Length: 196
Image 1: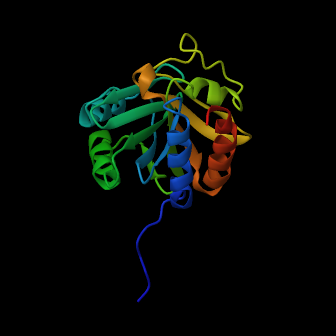
Image 2: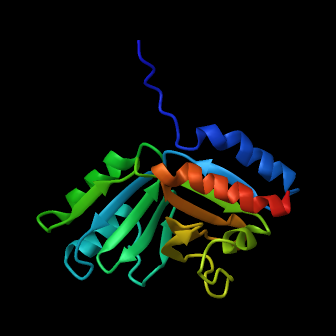
């Protein structure tokens, strides 16, 4: 019988990520957060569905560019004037999609499950900004890219969605396409040798 267990895109790198974390003496922490639910949602932010969807989700979707709103286990990232990425615990995609579609009613809405498209790397620790700055052109200083900010950018020549978590100590999420996850993990591990 075939093995049907899911394997995360970075399962093969888990040991090396943990070793870099231990070796840094607390300067950085690298880990994969596999299988997070990720839903791409599109609709008219000024239309009647906006408020209803926000109420159904228990949060108002962010309307300012490159911002993040979080309520409990649900995080909403602004990707464009009519586009958001919802990130939640693994396995919640169907329930979230159902709530969005029911709230939108007859209004046009697009909900696409992109959970398998990306994995998430957690990069945290006192030197997390320094590590990411090696390969990211954004100004990652907390005054410019502090908690509650997100951006579609490149890191080590890889397209990512970078999210500054709620508190500075919470670090960053790096959402990367699964097909590039191994390369990006290798890049981060190489850049992290400075702290190991």
